Image (tube, rainbow, N blue to C red; front, side, top):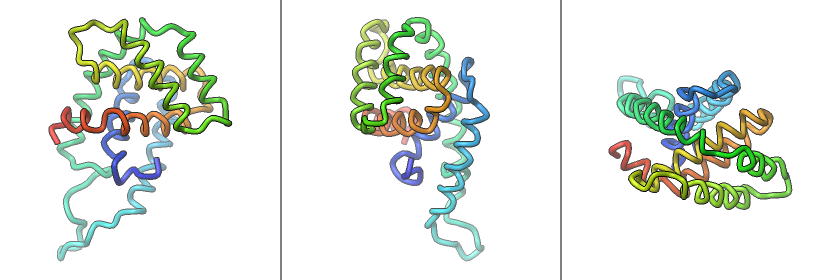
Length: 181
């Protein structure tokens, strides 16, 4: 999450909002704390130029244009509804298996991302064919994130960081399209 200002900004907003609006997120307080730490990092690295009126260029709140925040909230709520439906299809062994990979400190983020990608692709096979593949995979990744952290709360930071990088690698362009960027 080192690059909240850069490429991970939209993924960050979408994942955090998805988790906030999800019906079964048992770590919302810790999530808010982590998010406020990230916002402070984001503001601390703010290189926007000052305008003649003393304000930063553009109107940014939490690193995102205000209009995008509402769009992200709407999309995240829709994805959370889909996620609630998918949640029933995800077997506990898949969640536990991924959690074990996250607990293994010898694995790099890239290795964990590979395990996550494998699990998401495997779960995608059970998703109705009428749903966009990328949307299904994105939702599954976020649901797995929620389920893993619900199971092992101490993994919050590692799971969020890995998921953000996974989302950026796999779905950045798709997220841009969804947000109308």
